[in-house]
Amino acid sequence: MTPFQRPVSAIWWLKKRAYFFFILRELTSVFIAMYLVLLLLLLQRLSAGPGPYAAYLRFLATPGMFAFHAVALAAALYHTLTSMSFLPNIIVVRFGEFRLPAIAYAVGSYSGWIVISVLIFWIVVLR
Amino acid sequence: MARTSEPFWWFLFIGGATIAALFVPVHIVITGAASWLGQAFEYERVLNLASHPLGKLYLFVLISLPLLHWAHRFRFTVVDLGLKANKRVVAVACYGSAMIGSILAAIVLVGL
Amino acid sequence: MRVATPRISLEIQRYRPEQEQEPILQAYEVEYHEDWVVLDAINHIKDHMDGSLSYRWSCRMGVCGSCGMMINGEPKLSCATFLRDYYPASIRVEPLANFPIERDLVIVLDDFMEKLTKVKPWILRDQEKPLSEGEYRQTPAELARYNQFTLCINCMLCYSACPVYALDPHFIGPAAIALAHRYNLDSRDQGGKWRQQVLSSEEGIWACTYVGTCSVVCPAHVDPAGAIQQAKLTTTLDWFRDVLLPWSGR
Image (cartoon, rainbow over all chains, first blue to last red; front, side, top):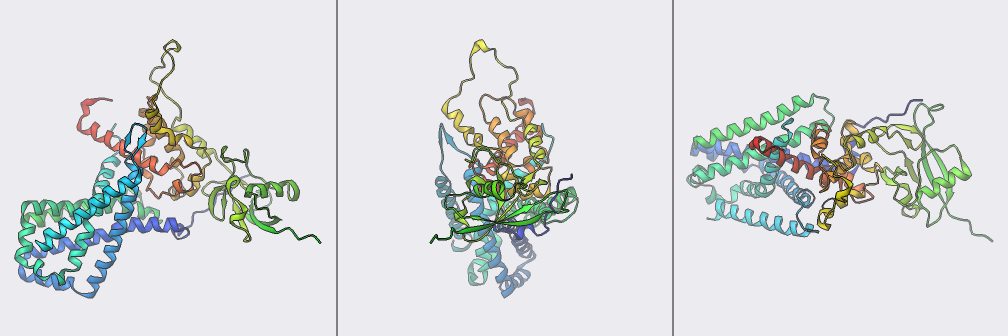
C-alpha cells in the first residue's frame, strides 16, 4: 500500500490570499531595485554634464516614468509597512519577565521613519 | 563554526531592507515629482549635494544595500515561483548582479 | 408535528489504496448541532453511518494535537472548529496538506517525527551535575524567555500551512525549529552547539522566507515564524563573532 503524494500546484501562491500577499511582499524588492537603477542612472547623467542631465530629467517627467514612480512608491510603502510589522517578532526586547509590546515598536519605527523622510526631503528639496 | 555564508547574506539583507524601508519611499516621491520641484533639481545644486563626501557615502549605501536586499529576496522568490533552476546558480546570479550594481554605483560616485 | 432537525453536509476526502488510485470526495449528511465541532460530526459518521472512515483523534480538547485536518482548505484542529461557523454551507474535510496520505484523513507523519528528534528537543548538558547538588533552578525571567515556545502540541498544522515545506520536503520546518529555539533559550540547556548543525544547515532556518502562515494557523500561538527569525538573528550575531573574533572561542 503506497501512501498518496499530492502534487504541489505551480500556481500555489494564487490559491490563498496570504500566499499571494507574501509573493507581493517579496516582489516589492524588484520595484525598489528598479528605482535604484533609475537613481544610479540619474547620478551617471549628472556626472556626464548639464546637457545629458537635463535630458534625463525630461525623461523622468514622461507619463510612463511618472506611472513607474507611482507603482514603485506603492511597492516601497508596502515594504516599509510589512518590515515594521515584523520587528516585534524578530527582535525581542525583555526587561525581566516583561516583554516590550508591539505598540512600542510601532511608535518607535514610525516616528523614526517620519523624521528621516522629512529630514531627507528638507536636505534634497527645501534647503 | 563558519560552515555557511548564509548569515553574511542575511545580515546584508536585513541592512538593505532597513535602508529600503526608511529611506527609499521619500526618494521615490522626490524624483517622481522632479518636474514640479524645478529649482531643487538645478544641475549645480544637485551636483553639489551628490558630490559632497557625505552625499557620496549616503548615496552608495542607499543604492548598494537595498540592491543586495533585492538579490536575497529575489533569489528565494524565483525558486518559490517554480523555476526549476539550480539554487546555487540563482543565488550567484542574484548576488552577482547586485554587486555589479554596487560597483557601478561606486564608480559613478567616485567620478562625481 | 416534529420540526425536522437541520442537517449539514460534509464532503470528506477518502483514499483507500486498495480500491482507489487517487483520493475522492465522499459526501455525508449529518444532523446539525450548534455545539458540534467538525470532529463530533466525523465521529458521528464513523459510529452510525460509515465505519470504514479512518482518521486520527484523541483528546477532543485541543491538547493532544492529533486531529489536524484541512477544513475548507485551511489547516485546523477538527476538535476546535465549530460546524456553526460554516452552516448552512457544506464543509470540505481533507487530510493535512503537504504530507503523504496513508488512508482517508490519516497522513504519514514519519517525516515530522524524524525532524523533531533531529533537533534534540530536550535539555542537553555537557555534564549532568550530581543529584546531591540539587535541581537546576530558574528565575521567572529565565522561564519567560522560552515559555511561549513550550506550548507546541506537535499538531503539524504549521507544516501544512508552510509553502517552503511544500516545495522542499527537506526543510526542517516550523515546529521543529521553534522547539529547538525553545531549548536554545533555556538557561538550563547547553546543547545549542549540537542543534546548530541542523538549524543553520541549508534545510534549517535559512530556507525559511518568512511567509508567516505557520504562526497564523498555530492553535497554541507559538509563533514558529518569529522563532525562526529570532534564530537567524542569534546565528548571525554568533557567526560574526566567530569570523571577527575567532579567538573568542565557544
